[in-house]
Length: 168
Image (cartoon, rainbow, N blue to C red; front, side, top):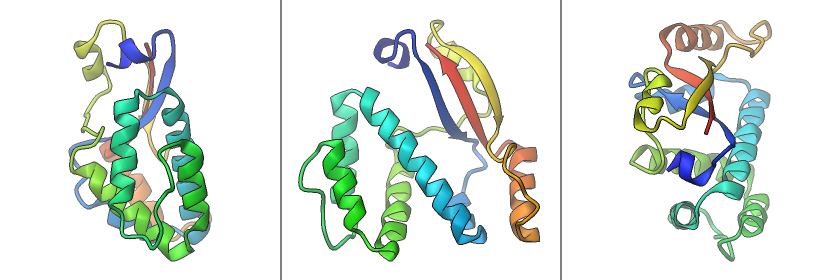
């Protein structure tokens, strides 16, 4: 599906390993400004995906969003509707929506675990792995708590999460 829908393109995404159980709860260990930066980067990645994704995948996302426990819902199924909805949420609702969305995605929407990005090339020989590296590799740790640094180091050393860059 990747090569069929994104021919000649490049894709960058994060891929959890099979060690990813309960990883979402660890996000609370990060300072608020880092959580905000991660949330912003996640939102930009989702927007980029939205522009390229097939309609049936977009429909799955909007269907998931309508099941979230927020006081308001998006008015439509276009990216502008989702952005407008998001901008109306309180900080608390945003955090709850992200947690609920991530939980929903763990139950089967466009997510799978990879130990090595090269597994993807076995699915389709039109895909090339350009790079794979630990999620936190380039994030400065100096200003973080010892617990957050430990989490990041453990994640990077164990391969818990990786950034994967593909060419299709």
